[in-house]
Image: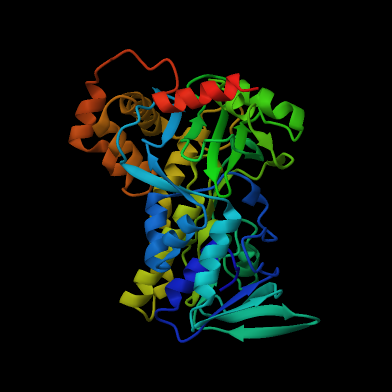
Length: 454
């Protein structure tokens, strides 16, 4: 296993059920607790684990969900625990249809890593960067790593690259004589800015808050979210596409939040105490390496997680897709080992990638200055349907359920094209849209108290 990332640990858990030994090599040291892990620059931003991913994590690492919740993570029922302004309007807070787990990336990584490394068949080798593959264009037999001042080869029946978006796999495959992998790219130029706040008193059960851009408008897409995380804190992430990115200046943070389609996030953080400086990131492009389409693929090699595909983090799909990659790895290794295994795993991982990739790419291409291939007439038709779906879902429970099933990676894209959903979307009711955020009376009273208790 190359990489002690979340993907690497979940893949190690998957393989520990069928392999005699699983070795995880990681270039950095692994912290002994819920602390920052070197090599994860995106960890300071908002992360969520959608229910489709959470179920996959629990299947691979039983007890992870219970331990996360016991450590302060929040189970956010969607949409009942979420106040969100979508491109179609404010979403009615219907009873729970899906959910996500909300916590810091440090806590999630630690809980999964601690449970996985306790498995008897898993060993970790931190501080040992991988330098390349051993083998040929048809069979990978191991990994070359640096151990202190010397190099050594770790032989393996199966090598899994879980080294993240900076994966060296394209270069390593070139050394084996394989052709270049086709890479798809969609880049909206999104910039992220995040900051931790101490949540105001009495907000322990306060909902998550999300204000989304409307991609139909020919302006940069501005977004913001407040995620409640452990220790009574709010993790606030703001973002903007090309021409509208937030800055690292703390003085600009609240101002940017108020410039969203609704100022509610700016209003709320004005009553919260900042705990950190502002962290910015611009590594947000959607990039997909099409390893599953390569004419020749070596036995004994699999690429998963961000090393395979990365997505605009705005949609919160990266960790959930990685968990489903690991679940596909477990299913393939348990069900049909032997020749062709690596190719089957790669194709299964590609299928698990499709829904998140389609959503991120189709939406990001709509913003000014976005880079990427045109979706064509069929793509334009689906985009128009998605706009209708987003509007209908704000007030029709069936449409909301189908949309959330897809967004949470609990169902494939076909769920929003079922006959009953099509009938609802194409023949919608047109009630007056909600004009204000759908807070409950108790939540509004709490907010009034925040603004009057100076």
